[in-house]
Image 1 (cartoon, rainbow, N blue to C red):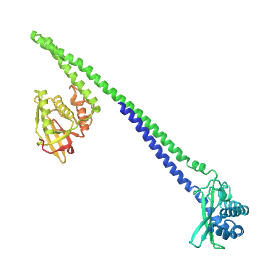
Image 2: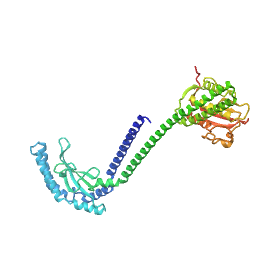
Image 3: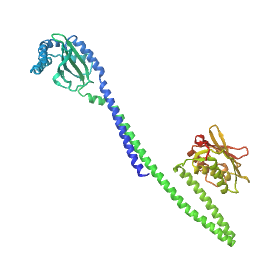
Length: 472
């Protein structure tokens, strides 16, 4: 594992975790807002309906209209005139009249008893508290046909509170906001609001959302744990892969060195004693040479099978007929006198996307197996091309001993040796290596016995990797 991978992975994990945490936090916040908006909405509706029945045609509370008629209405004309004439004491006059009016409203109000009665009648939670608030007073200006605000108090301003002990008000705990108008002695309109809630509303909502919080925290914890375990496993796998690669390279070097020395020594021994006509030494030298070559072939086969998964396929566009001819010519030289290789070329100009080393290994193992598992005096292998629907197929047929039906399912398994392998040299890796190469190329293989008793292999190649354009 290189240093770049080590640095990128923690950053990627940290960034992903941060994004996920922000996303979960945003969803929790939105859920809280929704809960806050709809919290106890049923109780608020009951309060609104019951309050409307309790006051009927009065103002704010029973007897409230009388307070308006004595403490506010008689002074509206004077106040309006002072404001329109821009009298210096207009502001002071208005503040004084509103303070006296609101003070009288607080003194004469019966809202405490009304609210208590509503809670009992509607069987609401007795811990609910409320606040009535006088929001705004407006007078109508006939000259420009507009309403002009003469007094306004925000909901968090206790100066406009008429009754109730609720301290925190918001749109979510407001039962209603009503505007009431009258025409005498001057058109005026006032607005007031009723707020009902628990003193510890936020804490109650958080408690109600406890399962959501706990589940979110549990999900984050699980994701962190899984990500950490994944990271550790990834690090361990990379270490094992690096160790495996290092081991393979070391073994290949350490094994090839003595094998090469043995082969050179055996060959030198044969050449030296051939001039002395020492047949016994020559025979022993050839045995050593032959067994060393066999050991080298086994070693390369094992190392190739193990290292294949670590290799990256080098896909190129190649003229498949020309490449096949070159490979078979090389194999003819290698296995000269052991087998006759016949090849029926593909139509010219066909190219194929493949890895040359994989393709060579596939054909090499096929020819090698056709020699090894063949008891005929004259051994043959024939390669021909077929095109079936949208797939090109390389048909490989030999005149060997065939494959027992019981061996077919496990034939491509590593180190599997079937009935025909008895007494034959090998480790059972040839066809496993072929299948591994085919899988890396995205090709498939099928087996059947020929009528003559030999074996037929069909290698199906994805037609999407072919190009029928003529090669220069």
